[in-house]
Length: 192
Image 1 (tube, rainbow, N blue to C red):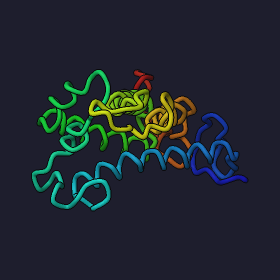
Image 2: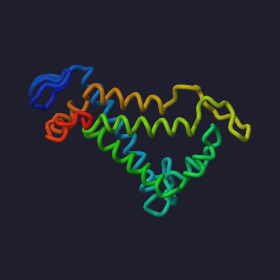
Image 3: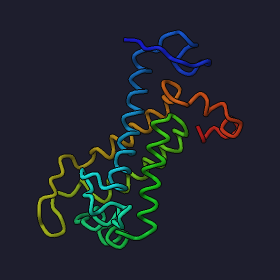
Image 4: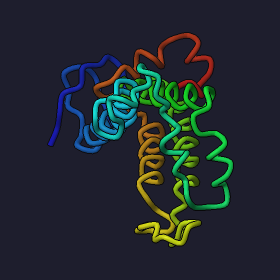
């Protein structure tokens, strides 16, 4: 399986205009777009209350809090009280929403993947700690329904972000090459 690349420089397995990209590079590009869309969708659902994870009545644009429901229902782990205190605060809402939007846009577009990977990994780590998969029971004694005490979807999302950033997946079907050519990005590789 191959796909065409529309680019003018060489990065990883992508070659010059009119040549083909290998299946691995194409798969990483698809992974990049899909993982970015996970973050963008969460942002849009919480902003507009699209009725999936967030009901219309709880939309952020209608005065709802994107963090109150999740953090307010934390019922397990050593940081339960901390997350309850953060739930619904203005800074937690803004940080979470700007994080979802920034990570989602950067990853879908293929720009700033290193920064997005770090920010997304930190966000996923906080969410992993909030759900505390090692616990089998909540603080009230109910089953947590945790299916794996270590590796859950938060770990997989973080790993996917790291893989697309480390592989330079923004260069295929993204704006990564253009982004890397900007003077500030050329001078500061961590911005790639």
